[in-house]
Image (tube, rainbow, N blue to C red; front, side, top):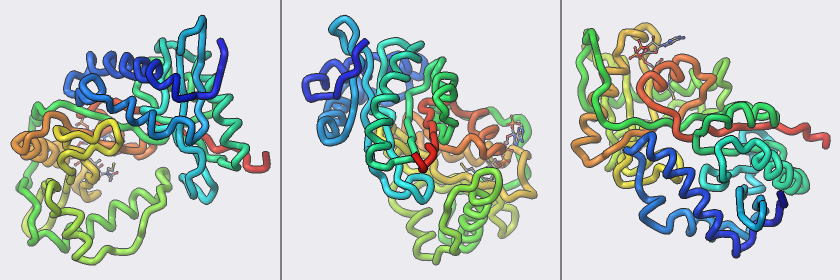
Length: 317
Ligand SMILES: CC(C)(COP(=O)(O)OP(=O)(O)OC[C@H]1O[C@@H](n2cnc3c(N)ncnc32)[C@H](O)[C@@H]1OP(=O)(O)O)[C@@H](O)C(=O)NCCC(=O)NCCS
């Protein structure tokens, strides 16, 4: 197998590889957007990056069997150092069990990243059977899971004792508090996500929770908002899931003392109902797997679609 620089002449073969991988994923999750098959989306994505940034193709018997390309220099990528990022559309391999192809491509691209002092490496992949093992053997850990589901209603056996309603202006100060609490939670152990820890003003909260295309659903007990899920129509959290039929959840919080009573499940159920009425055909969410309660919650309702892995290289190299 030869590893060569990714040139314009490889775009067409690379697009075919990505399309094949995506078609396989879509056969498992038919609710995924059809834009990869129906449009030139992947070809346009690759054309926008090839020969501008380092990328490599794996060639076996004159056939492109893999590619990897991304953005080599991103300031403060998950840390104070510069990092490099390969999006989910920036790689594909001919076979699922393709540890050798993936390893060879990473070896080539990571050399180009270290040359420009990019030490934090993030690579996203469409889910496949072997990718977790392959990436952990290469020194990566899981950073984020993008997950999806269709718009059937989650099953709720016992209805929680709260009112589920669309969030409105009257909830704004409760939402302001909850918005702060989620940032405190995400900055604490074991997530350690860098967040803005100032309380946002009401104007920003209004924009975040009540802009056009935003769906906010809350669970209330008296005047208290005890749980909230918010998402945006037409807006998954990654390029692949930006699509008119996707409802992308970007906020979910239940106050600590109300957790594990199926309240977020009931809120999710209402959010799905509203998104479905607004024309969505799938729902997506992203979360850090080290956020344990969030992982259990989202994975009991959603299936992983994209795994992103991170590796921090010793910056004395
Ligand atoms: C994620 C969150 C919104 C869920 O809210 P909730 O009202 O407790 O959700 P529910 O009660 O409907 O469901 C919780 C599920 O997670 C499971 N769960 C939670 N913590 C768990 C743990 N440590 N181990 C095993 N299961 C766990 C519960 O058993 C339940 O599963 P089930 O539906 O199979 O019974 C809440 O935990 C939260 O606010 N977390 C902090 C903020 C956060 O991280 N938000 C998500 C950001 S991506």
